[in-house]
Image (cartoon, rainbow, N blue to C red; front, side, top):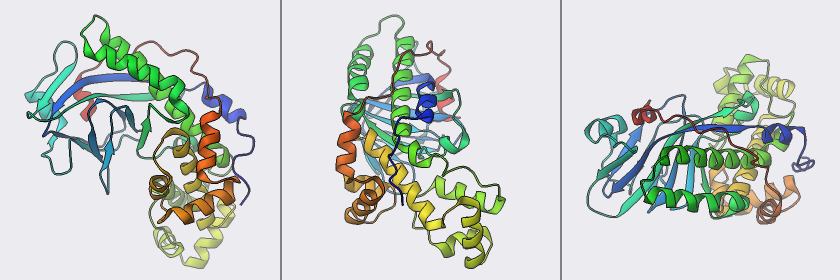
Length: 337
């Protein structure tokens, strides 16, 4: 496999620099343990910023702890559960909102009498929209650390300002929340895609073969699963031999090579936008152990994951020149749609 990080800032990165996020902040939530809410699946991309305390997010599989200062993105609008810890009772968000309406400042208070967590919750869209082949590089969930990674120059001061704003009730706070969320999300997505898009350029276009396109879409959706050629062939409704030949003809490489490229592409995005350890990144992209992941990553990128991360953190981020005007604040119940 060719090294994947050649020509890091090319025309596609220029296109990414033009992408901005238009966000809508639905509510500032103050929770006291035990608490838990469920958001249903919808086309609306979603985000949560943890401003105080911790939370546990469950999308599928193992729960993921989200600490203070971390930003969770769900770019494809997947349904999920947020709570103070695994096992805490969970209610649908729309029912919580019906029983505990947000106040005039857009604040929701809910839960018991235990440890407190503060979340800023909302939805977003990309302006202009990303091409499908680029949007598909985004995972179902991204957890980004505002106090680490190459985003520090942008996100850490903004996070501090955001926390300061949420401590008070000054006029115009909702508009400030929306503008700060715009910058958070724009810079996080640009940084992730700037790391992930280069190996994908010319490699991840959707196949004109509908059966192969369906399998490609499936791989992009969940590359971390333990896919085999036999399973992929079964999903395509073909024999192993026929599937392998048609996949290579349509995509330009064998299915497992494509899957490996996709996994490592996603890993590069994670390494550039989070301080989660290499073992965590390996597991997130479908490697059973850190050693095999590091070997594959080094072969593809010409350096081990840790060195790639250090280089990424030292590199200039795509500029956040100006942010679109604040979005109007819709009803908080929109988050559950």
